[in-house]
Image (cartoon, rainbow, N blue to C red; front, side, top):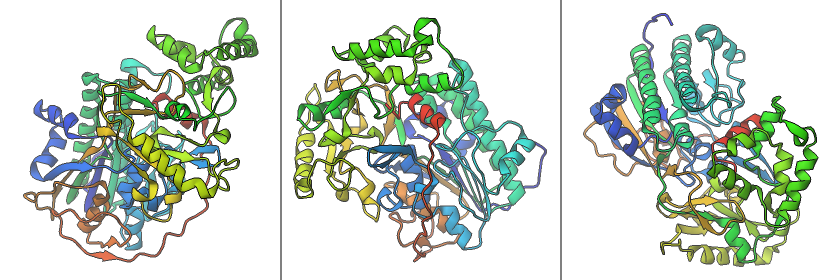
Length: 544
């Protein structure tokens, strides 16, 4: 890209998904991230306490709206309508974003790769959606994606799903570069007062290559290069580096909540049929994209389906098949060749209409009650609802791991954790793993406890750093919370925080007070209904 004059940007937010001290500090010590380190060195920084649940689709909306999920309405990757589900999108975020509040004050923004922003809402400036968007997302203004590609070349939201190993890491570095190049182009094109650029691959690399320090370093070095280029090109007055949560190794156990609830007589199961997506979702998408298997089974998948169904009757489930194949390195090979309906024929799944309570989505950290009058085939009468929840809180609070440690830090009714008009969209009982060292799973079968499916996963402590104009670098900002980011960003731009926000301005920045903004005028929610997005979530273990 040709050099352009620096912009008049006042505040830049750099989002580093899963960024935390345990990852950053060793890289700082090695001198691997000079531009990011310079922000920490000349500013104020602290750990950033994430919310419940500390996962991308809920935490980033909380960060850029300043409110808890009970006020913005997104609790996980999935949204539910009875027993049906869909992947969340921007229409499910029912509160104004930072850039929408700034727009109301006559300030423009450029936002690149922020999760759960598709389809984008109109503002003065530009929005290029990130995670949970389709590969070719609608952008604002209309036609912007083509314009970006004409200017910088290729622009993608995700890496190709058939990439692997070093090739995949190189794709991660390319995606990081695309974010930086697109942001710099749009910053000069729109010359906004506010900029927001998010890097997702700093999280993804841990899910794909847990414990591989070399691959993690390669991704972070790419981010540092782009941050440096953005700082040089845009010269913002104030810079914030923020993350939605941390990342770390899980030394505890996998606790299979639905298997535990089945033992308590609350979950019923069935073999085959429709239910939550399993590992075989990957295979379904590859076959839909034209990959074909070999042999008689591939020509007639019903033969395999009948065989697996017969196996299921004697305990052969897709979970056990996957575990056995994975142990010898063949799970991915087989997943590429087994149709989705074939694997489902062997899957042991929760029978939602017949169960009393169940975990639908491990990411939302909670148990849902099959309530009569709310769910299509609810079995729990309204008069028994509170007692069922009390029973769930009591039984789950008492669960201990095989080594005698509590499985949960806290188990509580949803209204004790969340507040706002959308609390009813949360799971009925919230389950917070102890130290985020216990891995929760929706699986049934194979026992109540086992080794964590993913050796690295999300931790509660992220990171925040502030530097530049109007920042008191000597101020102690320990105790910073995810909800504090939005009011702090607004304060750097001289804009009052919204009185519905749950956070407050960090003490390194002078507060500009609060203001009562009009209630959010929620548009109709739209479907995501994108099999490729679903498959990518399954790839990363977000859908079991």
